[in-house]
Length: 540
Image (cartoon, rainbow, N blue to C red; front, side, top):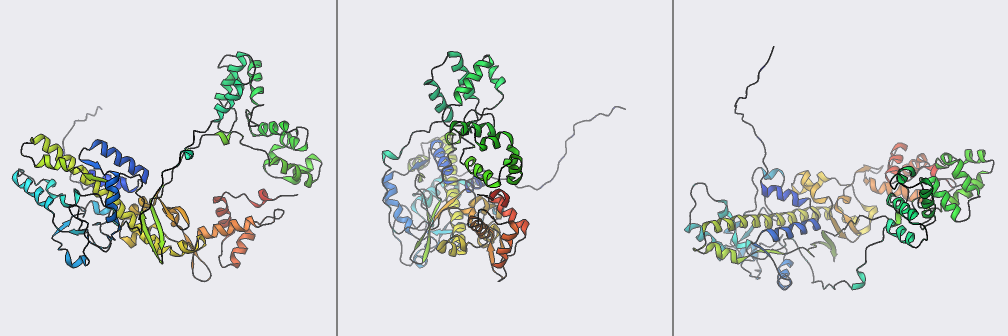
């Protein structure tokens, strides 16, 4: 039986959430670090001619406005005016609002409004706003209302301000000296090839040695079999073995080995310990040595445990990764997003805008749009660029407001930690901050991920403030990070010959009012990458 299928048309009614480009950009900005945001702003400056960057002279003048506490003062700085009324709430008529509220679809990801303590910023209408409205009135659109008319030009055309940014005094920074700039580090391959060029040998051995160096791992071990390297040339095995013998005499000692056992034996031979018991332990009893079974190892060797421990002390001085110090390091640049500073008895949150371009909208394009001689095609292009620029400025401002709110709640909950240190870190979950500021949990997660704060306790990732906790005998919540710190201190203070077992650590914690099972102690110890009591035991 042959079945045939025919294409048909059908309609289906469904409900789904569609992310607008503005909302998508807002979500992406929240999870960006300061360096990533700087790259995005630079890209937008190159692509959008409507945006322009403030010159250093203008930035040096305009930050005086940043000293205003926008959580208490309305944003009434219009058309370059720097006058702040003594009683802002009574002197400013909230005739026009800077509409920062989101649509119903956007409210699932962010809160409605941008103000620190209110849902919107209020400001008086500016002359630029009236002019923009008149321009649109002279050329009405047909059909649906153009969203371009909803743009508030009164605040958009002015310098980009920093809500919530407060500082006590201007910071005078010196440019870095020339001595602080370093050249790139030398890699392991470059260092070995440099030694190879100083070695007198035949061209064939030199080529084989270069092939061996090119097939080394970052730790200095040969990646692959020696036969595979010989097939590259092809070179005779005698030539490759001669080349490997030359490389194994290079610095760092132990480089060119096939595995860890050969690496340690090369180092012992170089230092003149090739005939010692330590070399025999590595060569003939390496599995027992790795498992730290000293009594069994002493029995097989026919020596005392103390003598085995003495040789083990010598082995521990060897380098199991000789090439690692020349391995390329992936640079992970950390720059604080905010500064949390204590001034008198209050903590002040200050944004770090160093290196971040300060934006505003170019007035010349506004004049071109108002000019009757400008073609409709040009006006439409400028409108599109204006929308993109306004969305960018709004999203940058929303990002700062969100980070400020999260940091503000963190400071309130972790004040004891900021004052006294890590032992006073309180348990805190992401949902706690989410409920405090009325934002979705995913929004808070994006804010704290990958962003750092400069605090009196050092530069700390915002996510590190969040930790689980347990209740002690006194009914107080204790952070698991503090418990891990106590376990680490116990192990550091233990007797090397009699290291503490997990049961003993759990018993000591129980005496301090924190009851943990042996399995939980072992889990915390493994998370801190601390070996067990058998591996820590030192028999001297």
